[in-house]
Amino acid sequence: MTWYAVYEISGGALVSTTTIEPSGLAGHLSYTDVGESVPVGTWNTTTLVFDPPAPRRVLPIRDFINRFTGPEALDCFGTDIADVTNVNRNQRIRGFRWYLNAIDDLDLDHNFTNAGMASFVTEGWLTEVRKNEILGDV
Image (cartoon, rainbow, N blue to C red; front, top):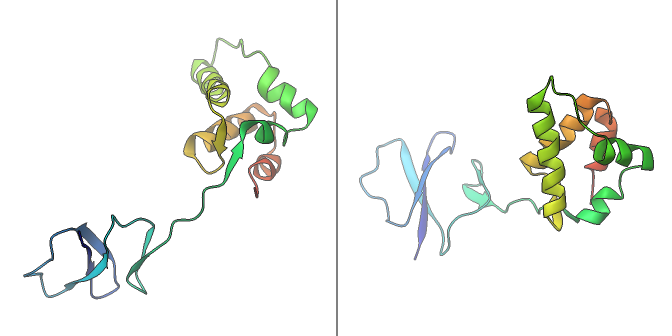
């Protein structure tokens, strides 16, 4: 099955993808064959192709935990969060800790990973700089 990308002639903005060869397009639109499988990656408005997706930055959970210093690990993973005045904050931190216990590999770019690490910064357990170092290169 052939996939097609419909895009704006002026600027190359992607309008849609389809398996039906487009016909009768409005004058400001055109299309291109993008291959035999579902397009993945990011549409490039200059080259009019899908650039391959960035490789996932994934770490085994043990390697992720080892990026923390001893005191950081105690704060982020061992501190009791018994503050009943901020239930939402407690749920975010507990949820992130539960998530880390439930998985084998951690995607460093996943929204949940970044939200969990941001909650550690909010608590003062990590600085923003240190959070970025921990989430840095694989």
